[in-house]
Length: 119
Image (tube, helix red, strand yellow):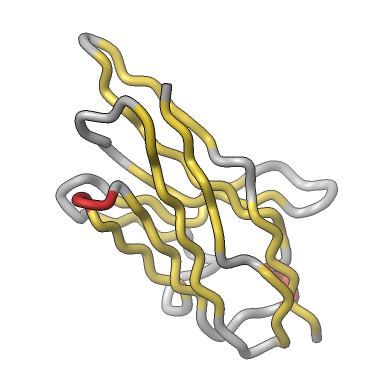
């Protein structure tokens, strides 16, 4: 079993910055892709950014140029640096990890961390 624990959310004014962290623990030999998703009230969960084990990133157009994703494979941790935050970035941010187990790959989700950007 794998657990993901997010941290770093909070309340920030527009134009400010936050850094989210997500640490994976449990029976982990390796982790494939890790990523961040978000869900605003009344909206579907959407991709924010993903990163492969080798460091290839995919960033949503809505946050490109403002958010960056990074990971530390030794620590099984993924980070999301969020700069120039806007009120529309307000959402619960979820971490996801794809973990290979035998012939299969399973995805795990964190519990979410609230990010609120005030205007």
